[in-house]
Each structure stands twice: as C-alpha cells, then as structure tokens.
Image 1 (cartoon, rainbow, N blue to C red):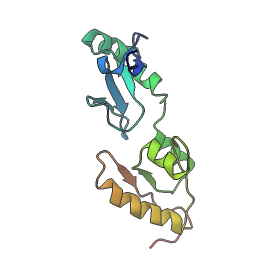
Image 2: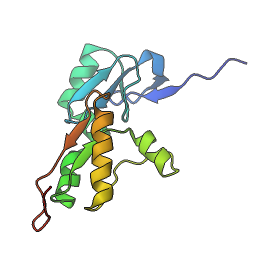
Image 3: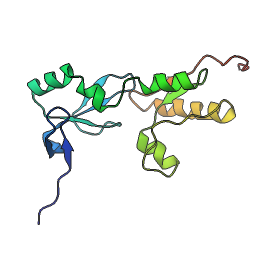
Image 4: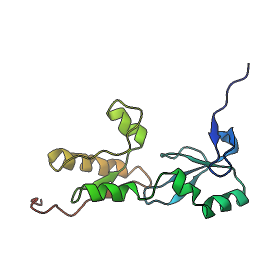
Length: 147
C-alpha cells in the first residue's frame, strides 16, 4: 500500500492532481498575486497547472479573484467597519486560530483601548521579521485622545 499524496484542484482546469505537480499562488496583504514556488507562504493557496496557456486563461477569466473570494480586500473591509482603529496584518490564519483554540481565524477586531495599543506594539515587533506584514496606525477616532 503506497502513501497517499496531498491533492489539490487546479482553479483553471478543475483537475485534481498531486500538489507537487501544481504551482501555488497566494494573495499578499496588498492584494497582489504571489507565486509560491516552495508552497510555504502564509495564506490560502490557489493552485494552478503550471502552463502559460492555463495561466493566461485563469487571468483573463479572473479565476484568481473568484477563487480567493475577494471582491474587496480584507484590509479595506476591516478599515470600513472599524473606522479610526489600527489594522495589523502580521499573523497567519493558523497562528491567530491557535490563540483562540481554533483551526484558523481570518480577522480579529479589538475595540479601542489599552489592549489594542499593546497588541499593535507587539505586532510592530513581529512585523520586523515578517515579509509583507502591514501595520496601519489609523488616524485617531473623533473624540479619542492622542498620546
């Protein structure tokens, strides 16, 4: 009995193949598409058969955007919901999930206050070691004291 290989579905052809025969892409924090040659970058993987014609088809049919379930970037969604609050994109979904005892967590919103300030301070330290990490200190909300 052989060992089972990890299988993924190509977003363009729909074929299920060994992940070693597909190219993985992830959507970066600035909504850019990043090829993940080593299949180790954080984020949800979008798998594609590595052929130019298939890549061109996927791009022209906007399959990456559809597969990523992104019509609006997560950063912008959180910014719209939490006006005046800072945004930190530093941890992976799995890392955030581990904090809350879950498999993964996509977004966490924490209200204004001392805890938020402390978390942003820690996130800034972690961001120094994470390529693509984003720390966006928002303008203070109306009525919130600065300093």
